[in-house]
Length: 361
Ligand code: UDP
Image (cartoon, rainbow, N blue to C red; front, side, top):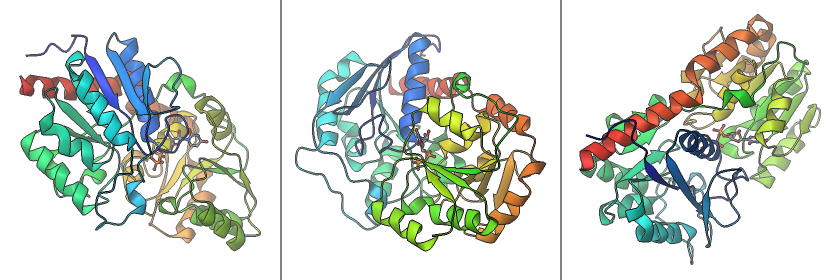
């Protein structure tokens, strides 16, 4: 039996779709950073393998050269598995293979076929943290095989996310968490709303812009501009919307912007696996209005810390925006503190890691 107080040596495989710190990898970047930081503070050893130029303050990163993976959400369900020449993912796996004996456990954050396929070829056990819902037949298949050969090794953010997979019961829900000391509570707000995230079709930004335009309120937008064509189409379609795009900000600056706003709008077209931005807003005391779809539907307490709205209904967003004053901003902060602290996240992951290590002995 592995003692839960034993110091672990962990090798994280970061997402191969982007350079850590740029936002290209989406919310999983924050999860990797938060978890690594907290494990390091609590006497565990963590090393992260990530694409070249990746950087996280005070966290050891081994950068690996090679070409980035194409994000699977743009590929379609039936698409075959693709790897570029000189694939960074393949290079990361090869590096992990060479150094594996120095680690108790490898933790894979790549939503990609290769690390799942290679699991039986490693001597060191691998925990797979799956950061999105079902996207690809080939990936679902290799994940299902991994779950059956290596029970308890698949972790996810939420139950709703797990339910998109044919192996939902094999998934362990780990949620997410934040360093709450980095997010300052604000009781007061300006009249504007905020929208956060990668600017890409699966995030449904156009609905938030449409709602803001119809209501005549200002919408601030922050996040990585991932799809330029999509963005320009939104600007053309809603010429009268009062929007301000502030770029992709680091957490410290981002929370300063969020906390001044009346509410966060979340408009996912897909089953959002979690939605880290929801808990970042709550941590600042900002209520969240979201479509009742995916992770946000498990996070937001309807009528208490925000509103859940019929999916794809701009009318629904507008109705909720008009009622935003009913939400007590302190209740939002309290929910973040009660459910999304970093020590709680660390404990959930450590219990999972220890279970995998115990059963692999
Ligand atoms: N984010 C950021 N700066 C910004 C806007 C967003 O760092 O200006 C981060 C935010 O903290 C969150 C991530 O982008 O961690 C978006 O993640 P989310 O889980 O909401 O969605 P995903 O991109 O994974 O679909």
